[in-house]
Image 1 (cartoon, each protein chain N blue to C red):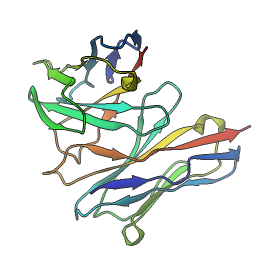
Image 2 (tube, one colour):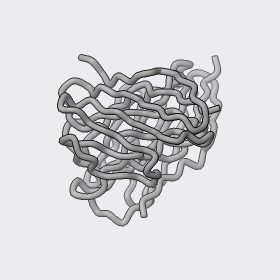
Image 3 (cartoon, rainbow over the protein chains, first blue to last red):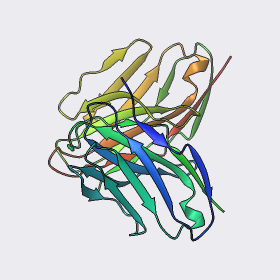
Image 4 (cartoon, rainbow over the protein chains, first blue to last red):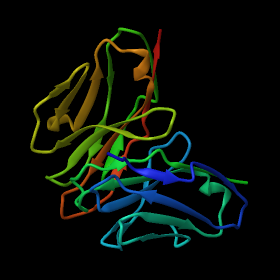
Length: 114
Length: 116
């Protein structure tokens, strides 16, 4: 049973560039959420996708955007990268969009902006 | 507003000691969910437990146990006879009612170091 998979695992980008992170949900799951985890902090909710639509968004600027594909996989795009965007980006999946559903995380994508 | 507080930043214990990780939450919802996750150095958050607000029974799973007390808004996690493999960062999280917000609110985590 495949868990949540994310790619790439690590990447380094320059300020001002754009980055795309990818996520495949756990088998049987249809909902994907993205979180940003800065060093020494807890994960912060970016947004959630269900039925190919953004259902809710956290307190992140429009530079952060996403997409969900018909096979439930998802992408997170960040434009005009800032040094402060350096973090671990975690994708989580669940079956259904209810907040009571347990979400399962991938290993994350470590983004360093220089 | 919802909030989760994990006041213990880092705890060090010697193997075989018992350790309790504290979690205090704030919410105005009557229906809510509480979670604990373990984050080893690899980065992945591993799900440990989910508890809804109407179920105050304590739960035990092997060496792990959880104490949920609505009266004090706490959801504490105890590891009995700790092992080196328990070393990780542990996060407590809160989510709202099924019809409301989808996001999880995480605490800042407690780093547990179990020394051999």
